[in-house]
Amino acid sequence: LKVWLRILSAASHHPTLQDRIELLFPQVLAHGTYLEHFTSFGPDTRNHLLTELCARLHFRYIFEGLSPPLSLTELESRLLTQIEKQFWNDGSPGEGSINYHLFVVESIYELYLHALSRRPDFAVTLHEAMSPLVRFTMAVVCDNGHWPTIGDTDGGMGSGLFCFQECT
Image: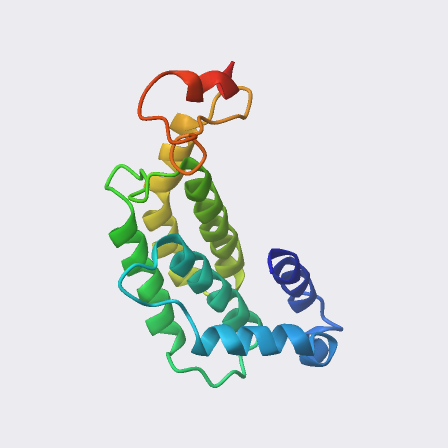
């Protein structure tokens, strides 16, 4: 999905392809339409919902002709609400997994870059919302670019410094 989003993002800024993008990527349009109607809202959605909302917004920025169940503003608002709900004030992940945190922050950052050209006002708001997440990320990533395996990849260990081996 991320590869397709990158291709679509590049193609959407190419003058020759802008009017023909739906002809070039019909299966991607179908996937975006599917996401519009089957997002994982529920009692325990967590990171999956954040990445789905980012994907939906990417699709909406590119395929402006979709007839969605939510307006663009409502969808952006849901993303901001989920960011506020799923992260602590310092930007640390409520779910507790560093790997998922990095994945979600990357998804939000890519959306921010896309929003700069499509929805600049939302990009400013998104920047404010993601800043604590980025600061937390910078605090846990080691100088060598590795990060501690806390959460889903910690082998179920409750304590110990084993998880910081990646940083040395």
